[in-house]
Image (tube, rainbow, N blue to C red; front, side, top):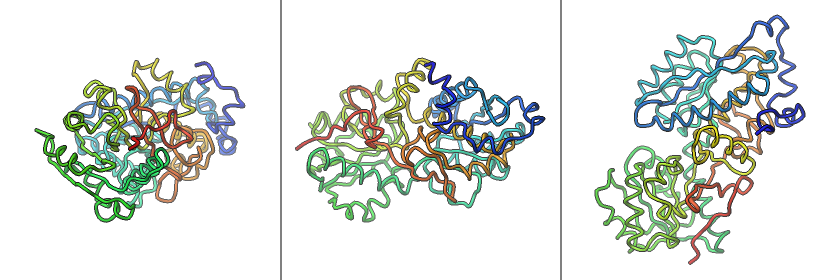
Length: 418
């Protein structure tokens, strides 16, 4: 862990965490002497039904702050330490917005922030932070986050409108690569909540057909499921080569996978592709068990992969978590992005940091913690990360592991060969 916490000067320069650009924008000696700490913020749900996700996000941010301060703080500010200000987004968009309002009124010296978890929360928060000219990083998927003309919202994920198409294209390519055969038929099962409906909208409106897929069964249900038997009976009769399954409640995943197992459609018989961070949580392993999860593939905006083993091991040791997942990895990476922008700005000022965020164009550094972009960090005129990609994660042996993109994969994907 020593190398991670105390890298050499050469390593720091190579990874881009403190570059020459930061020195070029450095402040006067008097300013350096005055800056003792630089505040950055996290707004995440720390109470209510999404408190677990908020806690994970805080774990990642805390670890990043620890690493940055141990490495000497913000070099262009004379080694000023980062301090994390945390606000609870609660269980509604209104509460998340109130948290943002409290933040900007009570912490005027915060220079940048990250959060929240749900897109609806992030949309509400950024209405407030934009008015305050506070640069804000988010992993939330909603296209609308970066379509409002805001100048200080920066999205590190692939937007939702691209995610569905990329998920299906990647699944088809993986199937063909692993089996030599491209699936021709598909079944779709999803609930009628906002996220899966949005995810499947364009796919149903001709997207799947354009990919050469014939839909042999298509079912939408209202959660929670009381009985998955009718859905799975129809699925068995349809005999698809691929299943796109998008419930939002873990209890519905459990019912569907249990019934599929009962009907002989799991355990290597039917490839199942899904989407979303909850599918990689330790809680789902406790609920479903590794046998039901084995082989399930899900697309996601980020997941630890090759090259991040040391970080994952330290995270596990520090927190007691069984693995590093999307939420802590992204908040860790977001704090590292903030670090680069503050270094470049050379001052603890939110407007200067926002300008620096728009100018970022690094190789290595914080880009190492996000898929795509050739390991760099750069945002386009909308605030979207250039080169963002999806990650495919598959349950193998009771652990969710990265299987795509190939450069980050820690294991090869397992695909049913018929």
